[in-house]
Length: 133
Length: 92
Image (cartoon, rainbow over all chains, first blue to last red; front, side, top):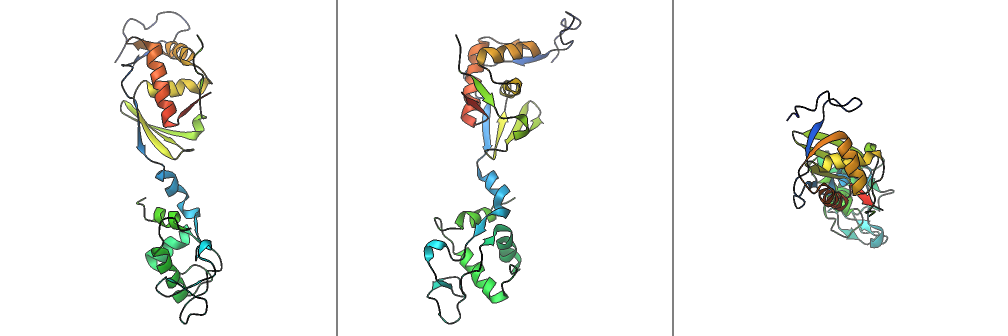
């Protein structure tokens, strides 16, 4: 839209002024199209999953990912450090073990991550890994 | 009458993409994206000159645009409240 008649009017004034329709007071002009998950997606690679969650105490991880008493045959000790979001993604999607962890141990940890439930440490990190990017 | 004074985050905190007559604004601090229709995007831009109340914003817009419609001040106040609800601006 142009505003004929204003061009050249008054020195020091913008020679072309855009028309801005103010609209009705009740007309909504701001729509939020993406909730806060966008931020979770941005930080997913930096989040961490402790295995097991600190609230679980000193338990071992069975091959199927369940928590078992220390010393249970076939189980693995807690992960020496939390697994990062990036490592968890590689582990879950392509079976790549995080550095310093062997294949079977890493697979037990992968199963533990898959069983994480809301409210457990690391769940938010795992949930955000599932989001389409 | 002095109205509520509003401030906006620095423009570096936002990424704006024009979509025909709308503007999509990604707000880095909140991780949220908003679609703004005129005059909300122009009001947000006007706040880039510094904090201001509805009267100050009206003066800034009048300096830049040929405004049409009526009840400018009330319309600007309503848009500022919307922008505040979205988190893009804060009231002091």
